[in-house]
Amino acid sequence: MKKALIPLGIFIVLVVFLAIALTRDPREIPSPLIGKAAPLFSAPILHTPQQQFNSKDMLGKVWLLNTWASWCVACRQEHPILVEFAKTKTLPVIGLDYKDKDADGLKWLDRLGNPYDLSVVDRDGRIGIDFGVYGVPESFLIDKAGVIRYKQIGPITEEALRDKILPLVRELQK
Amino acid sequence: MKYWLALFLALQCAVFAYAGEATPLAEDPVVEQRMIAISEELRCLVCQNESLAASRADLAQDLRREVRELIKANKTNQEIRDYLVARYGDFVLYRPALKPLNYLLWFGPFLLLLGALVVLLRLVRRNQRSAAPAPLDPAQREKAQALLQDPGLHS
Image 1 (cartoon, each protein chain N blue to C red):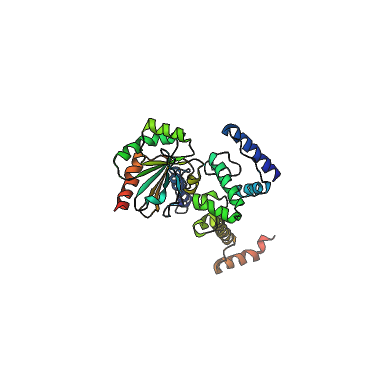
Image 2 (cartoon, chains in turn red, purple):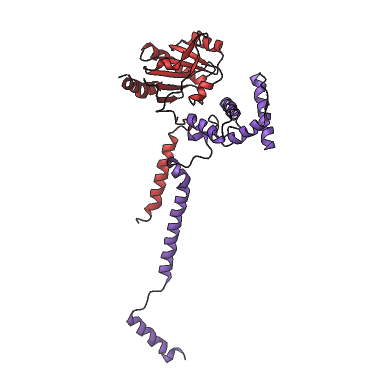
């Protein structure tokens, strides 16, 4: 009788593993950059291209780097949440306009609202590659020491903001 | 190799057709061949079942450009792979590195095979044991002797 239960046991274990796998998103590839220093970059600012933004200037602050683009569909879904979030002035939000035309990016922000303290342009996607970006939107929470503490792959949702990002921001800002 | 180069060039043409800007094609065939050899072993992160060499995704083109530039900067193949792993993780490698985190991935199948062998061996042993006739006790032996010597049986 006991022996007969062994295949059933194996089957149940298999089903549990498969069920867990179903709840996971294969497009979410864990970033090796979490817990490591964010790559330093310097790039022109979208609204004032003659000026450069240097990510070194953000040392000492907890900040959010949000990659977006005017051609990105999922960014539209995320945008209203970011606009609302920016009103709370919780932390500086820097946009990275990824592989976009500057004019399109400016138009997009004019129409949908600008949640960013400033946006920098990454016209050829090089900064994106340094951050391991493989799809927009992606967001990086960077601490005072310039270390990436959290990466949101895909749009920031209200749940992700409430349950993951905000508690971590509070902790990091202490 | 020639076939891949041709395929790659064909893909480039197709891509540039809608990108609308002419970029010089494969100015250095040696660089191009090395780039393809390296990127065939790498996974495109956007379309995960395609190699970086074969993918037409925008990101794959950018990454091929990076690989090309790293080759021109005299980096070794290993350095180029490390560059991509540092950004995208082990997931970009079609042949994951042999390190503790990946041991289960590498040796898991052999463990399963070993387990199956152990089960098989035990089954075979048990079958052999039950197939061997049980030895007779003295009373049975006597009865057998009596039966064998019974002349009536042969007549």
